[in-house]
Amino acid sequence: MEPGIFRKTIRQYFQKYGRDLPWRRTRNPYHILVSEIMLQQTQVERVLGKYEQFISAFPDFASLAQAPLQSVLSVWQGLGYNRRAIALQRIAQTVTTDWDGILPSSVDLLIKLPGIGHATASAIAAFAFGKPSVFIETNIRRVFIHFYFHDRDDVRDSEILPLVEKTLVRSDPRRWYYALMDYGAMLKKQLQNPNRKSAHYQKQSPFKGSNRQIRGMALKTILEKPYITEAALLKKLNRDPEQILPVLYDLQKEGFIRKQGKRFHITNP
Ligand code: ADE
Image 1 (tube, rainbow, N blue to C red):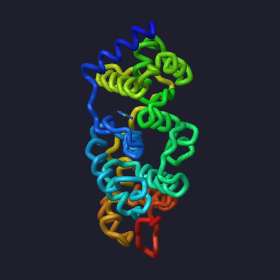
Image 2 (cartoon, rainbow, N blue to C red):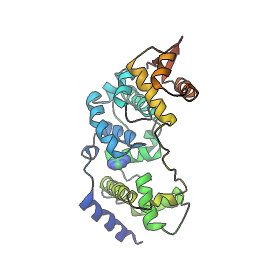
Image 3 (tube, rainbow, N blue to C red):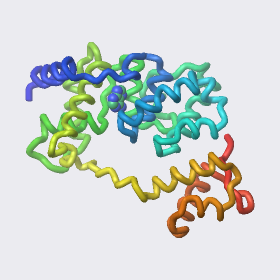
């Protein structure tokens, strides 16, 4: 498809159906960073409930940097993948101590921060700093497969990236990427999700009863009852210990929780 027609289709869709999301009303790099980390593995609907709550609890890099990990995790509850909260706090600490409270605008520097990969670094560069970065995330991938690879399977991101670069609206990358993401979110609701044609496609595993759910429940229980005994924790989680114990072991190994004697508590920074 000719780039002009492609752009026009996406932009017309956005003009009519574009989503008005709170993190699209700001250029505050801290606010954009928080939203992008939250949106990494979590649906927009679920992030909407947490974003403002998190920003009010920790309004800037300095307050997040100084907060006890307990309170950061406690506000994060419900989003899952708690290592993102820890990474976010580490970023806040780096920014306050090393960079005078200023988030860098270049992809090369952003990508060095914990929890920030190429897509997140590029999204921050585009949304907070208006940079014409070139990147793919799940919604963007879906749009390009739909328009350019409808007759293909196992499409690689390396095949899509040159098209992202070629079609990028350099005069307003921010609005362009919002439009691509919204078009992609719309395509997802269609019967056949184009991302099934991606070589990188991974169906979201069922959450209920998964290790990820047990991790979340274990952390929540320990947050609510610090220094809970192992026996009390197992009782409260009401699951086969053979499923819970490896999860608790992983949480310790990754530094989220510590065991002292028979009791668990959340690790302090
Ligand atoms: N708006 C800005 N960033 C976004 C993202 N990662 N997903 C959906 N909408 C967004």
